[in-house]
Image (tube, one colour):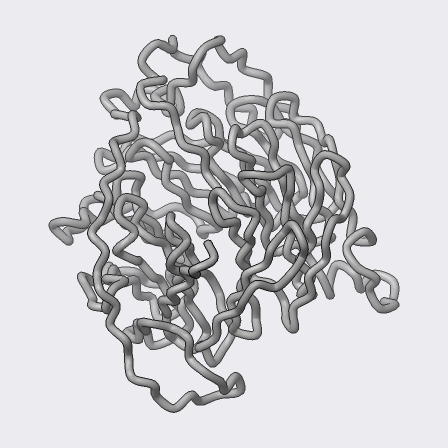
Length: 425
């Protein structure tokens, strides 16, 4: 979960020195950070006049839920539909979903049908289509203030729309897209591509900066909570903390990355089933969660382990020193960061696609290839509840700020809204 930034912290911080670019060198020089509160304006050189101060969050009016009629469930995952709303305008698998951070009343979804839609959570009503993509839309998200929405397809075409006017305000063609993320406090968009580059744009004027990685795909990335560093993972198993230094790498390509609330720790996952804990200030590995500590796997032939299992998702708990790691074999591992030991192991019937921690609690949400959303108590390892309704695998999901809604996307061509608020919480 992202930490809340301190209002007005950016005002008193002097600018960083100019970033250096090192091509294919393995070590990136350390840029000394001035003491004092961080200034997110320093993230992008010559990107002036960006207001990074967080606006006061407006409490959105709660809207009534529209219950959809139960229809016959088809496919191999027959069962009850626990969802409140179904969005069914996609004509192929729906790959990604994101909620608007300001009000949590809108969703954007992108799919294999080369389409992206912005729609209302309360009743599934379409607000507008993000038209013009030429390949599967795999990335989508709203800016920090919910005024802009960005979509990106596999070919590298990125587009940004103004939400209130529903007009396209910016587009860019990069290389094959691996990931995309908005800056947490500014209209700055970052993306990683298959050529190893990490791109950064100020939207909508298009000011651009490129961070050159090794000659392999930049497979995952995340803006750190201080707003002026980003951690990027590469297919060769290395990470680079822009603008600090390179962290130690693993033996397999990285698949996912997460940071704790203050940005001091980074957790990376890779296809060789290793999750590594890295210090963001030194770039050193301070802990390794190895696959043999997760579960007793059946005997595998030589070289089979990385093919049969991998780290798919991971994250930090915001209230306890815990980290969760989800594996393709269906294992959810809860690790104690203080002792770096396995605390609980929670088994799923199918592979885990993604996990998210609920803010302010020790509850972790998982979605998996069996089409089910599950809620786990990380303190005990107990399954709290599950939610069903999809007839194919879940490919992505998002959680509202108050943890009352889960929005899922699936291979059944649908997105669904589940109401998960419970009386005991």
